[in-house]
Amino acid sequence: MRAFVMTRYGGADAAEIRDDIPMPEVGPNDVLVKVHAAGVNPVDFKIREGKLKAIKKVSFPAVMGNEIAGVVESVGYAVTAFHQGQRVYARLDKDAMGGIAEYVAVNQDILARMPASLTFEAAAAVPLAGLTALQALRDELHLKPGYKVFISAGAGGVGTFAIQIAKHLGAYVATTASPRGDALVRSLGADEVIDYTSTKFEDVLHEYDGAFDLIGGDDLLRTFKVVRKGATVVSISAVPEPVTATKDLGRGKVMAALFWLVSRKVRKAAAALGVKYRFLFMHPSRSDLELFAKLIDDGTVNVIVDKVFPFAESAEAFAYLESGRAKGKVVIDMGGA
Image (tube, rainbow, N blue to C red):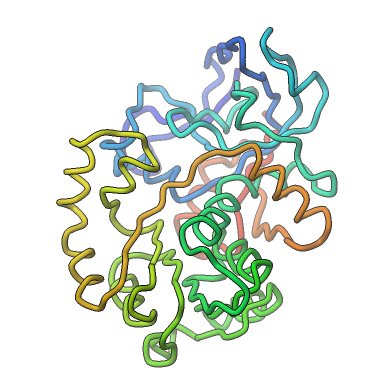
């Protein structure tokens, strides 16, 4: 079958379209999905660059892509939840990839019926970014009506979902955006928008109940100054800490110790301000995807797709995402595969 694959660790030239990739093996609990569209995310090019070697082992050539929408082609003999012809979507297993291909095998426990109101391209934009936002805000920050939350980079793929989920949970939302992204984040419900090109958000925001960092680096350290003492800052762009190893990845003491070392500076900075730091590696979930389908179909959440690329231009899709210009999600249309 045809697929977009990594041939080694490296930059853009380390991935290519190939037409000699074996069909995926379908286990008893697996669903074979004919992929109609695949979402593209920062985690994809971080894997390609080798930045996640400690977390994820890759055997080359490796089919790229971690979220898909498509149609059930066939099912394993133990599958009870799905049948041929259903329109489905998924965030693939964290120990696997394989989304940017004609077909992918998905365990039935992490697959869900896609929102009835969406096209395949829009549905493929939801699973990874949507679940990341939901699990960060609901499960880690425990947002409630009246809480104030700061979400950095609100116009990005995760940010556009995070603003809407936070509003759905009843929170007051502040975010950062460029002048080009201002109208978008306000349309999604942001209560306060800081133009990061002219204003430091920590000079404006104070005593927030929690924060969701989507940038990392110096922005994360500045975010610690925005929240009240005892509050939590969740990041998906900085460095993992020990809880990431045990809770998110199911690993043992060795990886927890490694993450303790690499996160020491960040945790120390947080502790100095009386703040808790948490790095989140989201988990696939059928129930959460079913919840998202309801929120989308009833109009609570809108899916923001910046640009759709044909399969033949998969490399261009990655280049566009890596440029940092995207407002919302970048998707590959597999129709031409």
